[in-house]
Each structure stands twice: as C-alpha cells, then as structure tokens.
Image (tube, rainbow, N blue to C red):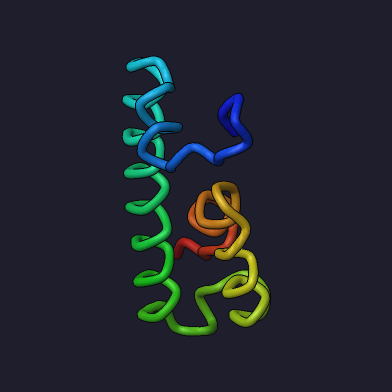
Length: 80
C-alpha cells in the first residue's frame, strides 16, 4: 500500500525489487517450470511398473512446488 491507502500495482511491486532479485525469480521460475514439465511427461509415459509407489501419489506430489517434481525425478522412477 502507498501512504494514501491505495494499493500498489503488481508492476510497481515488481519494479521495486532489486534487479538481482527479479533476475533470480525469472531464472528459478524457469527451472521450476522445466522440471515440472519433464516430471509430468515422464510420469505420463512411464509404465506403472517402473514407478516407485502409486502414480496417483506422485501426481499429487508434483503439485508441491518446487520440491515435488525434483522428488519424483530423484526418487520416483525405477531404473533398470
């Protein structure tokens, strides 16, 4: 909020962040988006026998950002 009680726009809030913080946010968001996409595609294509635990559990885990996709990629897949 500004001093007059008027809320700042999201653009104003974004511009108020230091440039290093904006850059970090964009980079980390991109990494999270790629990891989630890779995990979703892998879970769809991977046969149930090659997944540790029920697929339904991993689907719900993928929604826990940013840890869910990385947990699935590291722990959810069986390697033969």
